[in-house]
Amino acid sequence: MTMFPMPMPEMPQEIIDIAVANPDAFADAMGQGMDAFQGAMGDGGDMGAAFQAMGDVMGPIMQDMGCSPEAFDAAGDCVGAAVGGAMHMGPADCGGAEMGAMFADAVDMMCPQDMPAPVMDACMDMGQGMADAGCMPHDAAAEMMPPPGEPGFPLPCDPAGECIVPPGDPAACPPDACQPPPPDGACADMGGTMMPPEGGYDHAPMPPDCGMPPPMEVAGDVAMAPPGDMGGQPGPMAPPDPTGELSGAENIAPGGPPPGDMAPPPGDMAGDGGMGALGDALGGPPAGDPGAAPPPDAADAALGAAMDGAAAQGGAAGADAGAGAVDDGAGAAGPEEVVDPAADPSAGMG
Image (cartoon, rainbow, N blue to C red; front, side, top):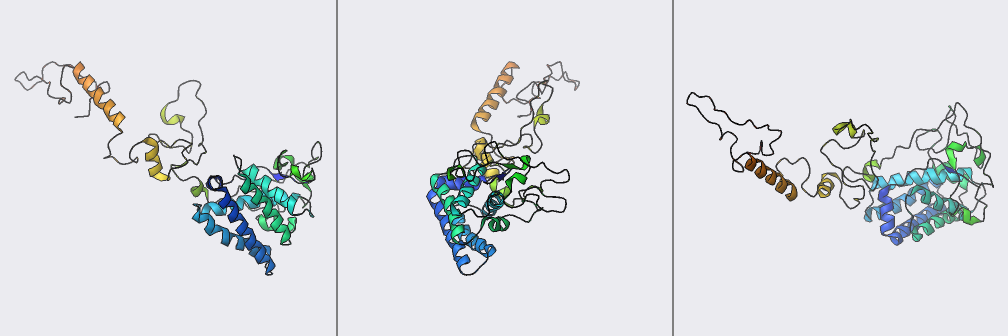
């Protein structure tokens, strides 16, 4: 029986995209990483050295698949917190199948979309591989997670920085800091041995002087969502304006794009980020180029508006705004119609 931390860290979208696009190669990279892990353990290394060996093998493979080192490291931190938290609360004697189920359910809970079957199978194999290398779940959990009280540690701690949830005691985790495995996930397939009892645990309350550690500081944030590429995740939205009194910048949520600088649509996953993706989203040159011509449709509309405005005033399109002035010989302009620049689409275009 085990529980998972709550909230779960979010898997970097960059990793998700690569896994979905090429699941067999992704699963093979996971398998090669686990082989390196087992090799390091077999050579007498500790788990820290084994995880380092795994990263040394998987990192370059993932980079060849298009994954940045920052996103790869961030994914490792996320898996360590999620799986480590579950192993910490799970039974001390659970075997490879149970540890593999924790890996699989953790990945499923961290990803907003279903992972392909080869990737999920590789997660199960990782758990079995750790067991075959002689790793016990509570020891693995301690190695996978940051020290208690530090950012990224997934369980509540007391003011002294000690975790208040003893290993193997999921009921000691306050209900607002943990959650059960998915009812249709890999842990559930273990025949109920990894699931909470019927009706759930009688969770201990959160002590008044305890709290959750600070959020995980993920170095891959920029790589996960570079400027101009939303990575499929929409940004913050301003609340609706029922009165209709707000306009312009008042309707832009904090942290959103500045007025006049449109972000690409949330579904733009193929952009190269930065101004290039912004230019692609707008269908024109990158923003910030004052000499660039507007998109064809915008130029046609502006020219048509100018011609219509000039025709309405009885002049030719593009005529000089001062050409209609009449001199009475004394240097004073004669009567003429005063054109409000704000109402004249052609004003300022000469």
